[in-house]
Amino acid sequence: FKTSNSASILPNDGTGDFTVVRNSSKKRMNSSGLIETLGVNVIAPDYTDAGCPVIKIEAQSTNTMEDSINFNSTRWASTLNTLTSGYLDPSGNYTAWKVSGNSYLYAEPGQTSTTGTRSIWARTVSGTGDVHLCSHNSNSNSLFSLTTTWKRFDVRSANSTGGHLFYGVDFRGSSTLSEVIIWEAQSEAINGDAPTSNITTVNGSATRFADVVSINTSSITGTISSITETIDGVDQTPITTIPATYTMPTGNINKIIMQ
Image (cartoon, rainbow, N blue to C red; front, side):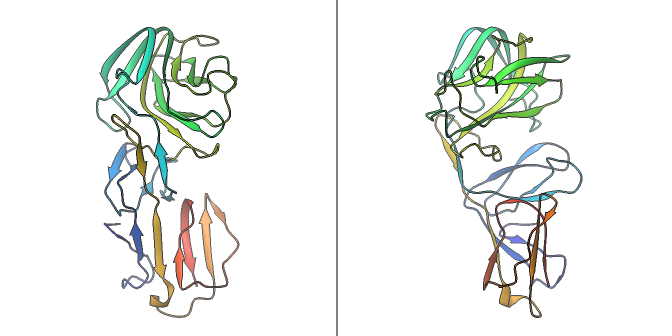
């Protein structure tokens, strides 16, 4: 893969290559298990599930958290907690924060409780334990089990208490931990769908534009009678009415076969 182009395996003469358009950068998990940033118009092979990568095709989305990484900024409020910076994060840098205490850390993402998907990366300092993430401790969807391995946690349904607030960490309620390490908070108005790839914000919201990966089918050598898409490991119903321009659908694309 390279800027504005995704090469096909067959044909390999360039006539089967897709055009890639996305007018913003994008993050993906690389083969080393690290989150990295790809430039404008670069396709995103993603290794989140290890093994062979998928081509992650995403719609446009906005992270309404106004400081997604700096949990000590004025946009975040912390009570009876200590915040310490400089911890190794999932991108291989040192921008993660340790939060220690017995209370909560929250921000207001400017989003209602019924339309948002909230996510955050978290791990323990040592051992395992439970803690409330992304929403108030009284909500049944907010308690997660953490280990020393980084994992992205998310809440996709309505929050009955404190719905307008993003609780990055809430040590109250059923939490058994008193310190965690966190990174990259995200709040998206995507109607309870899974969180999209990370969108970093600094002093305001930020938008990642949609992936548009397409090909002029008339440019492909030979006659195409069907297109079969494999998404999340499942072969879709073949497309037999061939469009002049074929565009990859949203989702985790394993392969596209035109024959």
